[in-house]
Length: 135
Image 1 (cartoon, rainbow, N blue to C red):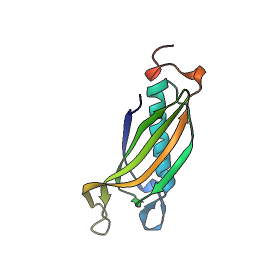
Image 2: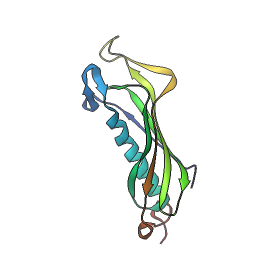
Image 3: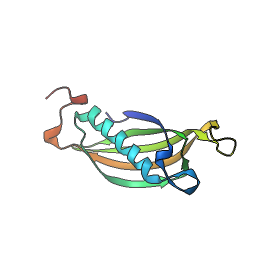
Image 4: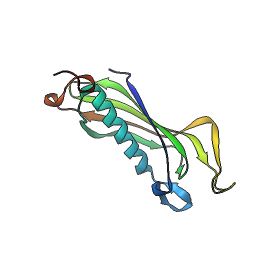
């Protein structure tokens, strides 16, 4: 199952804004990564497992309320109980409050805003096969 990828698309709302200037905190991106890892664990083992930790996290560009983002996770290593995942958040649409309160631009090229590597674990006794089918 190495190479398995899942994506989650979402719009960042006013409720996600944490700082002045309509800025969304980086922790919100980590929450999206948690959802990605949970889906991967269910797909690989039929159990939500536990996100054990990050090896690295890089915040490369800011996120703002009104932005549309795509979170992506790919399994790069499958151990007996642990799985290493590369995670990314890409911005596809950016809010443009400088133009008008409801203006937004589709970016010419998606912008990589956050990159991380982490590990999740599913205990052997909780493995139920892909997507929960089997055992």
